[in-house]
Image (cartoon, rainbow, N blue to C red; front, side, top):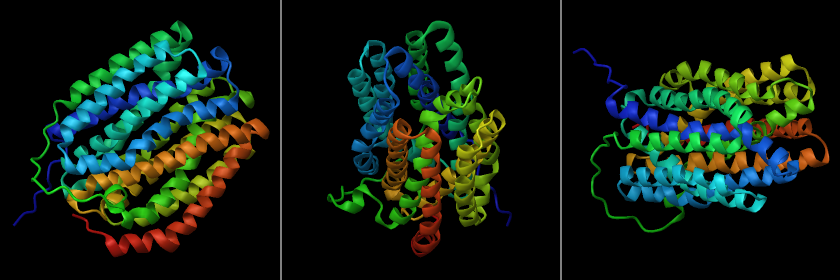
Length: 391
C-alpha cells in the first residue's frame, strides 16, 4: 500500500500564514523606528528606551500564561479574531501618545492583546498542520514572520524618513486589520466538548517543558538585546544605514527556515538546537568585539541563521511533549519563555549601555547562551526524551 504524504498547504494553513505575516509586519515596522523616535523626538535616554520597549513584553507576559488555558478551554478562532482586532486597533494609540508614560501604556496594552493573539494563532496553525509534517509546517509558518522581518524595516525606514512616525503608524493600522480579515478565513477542526479542567500550575505552564523553556529563555535574552539596540549600536560604531541590519538578520533566518523544520521531522532536532546555541554564543562575541561595517552586517546574517534554526526547533520540542488538548498551554509556555528572555534582554541592554556600552551587553548575552547550552544537554534533552508524544 502506497503511503500518501499529507498535504501541508491547505486553504486554512495559507490563511493562517497570511494572518501571521500581517500581524508581524506592523510590529517589525516599529522595531527600527521606535528607538529612533523615542530618542530623537521624545528625547529619551537609552535606559528609558529599554524600559519603554520592554513594557510591551511585560504586557504580553501578564496574559501569556492564562492565554494557553483560554485557548485550550474555549473556541480558538473567535478568541484569535477578537484579540487580533484589539491588537490592530491599539496601533492608533501611538498617534495620541506624546510622552514616555503614554507610549509605555499603549505598548503594555498592545502586548496584552498580542499575548492572546500569538498563542491562539500558533495553536490554530498547528491544528491545521498534518502531524507527520509538523516540524516542516512550523518552519514555514515561522517563515512568514521572517518575511515580515525582512520587508517591514525597509518599508518602515522609507516611510519614517519621508513622512514621519505618525503616517507610518496609519499604515501599520491598515496592515494589521488586513491580517484580521485573513484570520476570519481559517477553518479550524471541530473541537470536542470537554469538561474544563481545574485551575492548577500545569494548566498555565506545561511543567514537563520547563527545562526546554529555560534554555529558550536564556537564548532569547540576546534576541531582545539585538532587536532593540542594533540600530543604536550601528550608529555608535559609525555604520551607515544601520537599519539594514534587520534585512540581513531576516535573510539569515529565512535561509535556514526553509529546511530546519524538515530536519526536525527527520529526528535531527537535538543537533539543530545545540548547534544553534553554540553558534549564537560565538557570533555575539564577534559582534561585540570586531566593530566594522562588514562584521556588523555579516554577523546580522549569521545571528539570523542561529535564531532561524533554534526558534522552530524549540517550538517543536515543546509542542511534542504536549497531548493535543494541551497545545495551547504548550505554545503559551514556549512563547512565555521568549517573552521573559527578550524582555529581560531589552532591560539589561538598556541599563548596561547606559553605564558601559552596548557591546558589553552583547557579551553578557553570549554568556547566557553558554549557560543555555549546558542546561540543554544536562536537563532539557533528557526531559524531552522522557515525555515526548510526537502525536
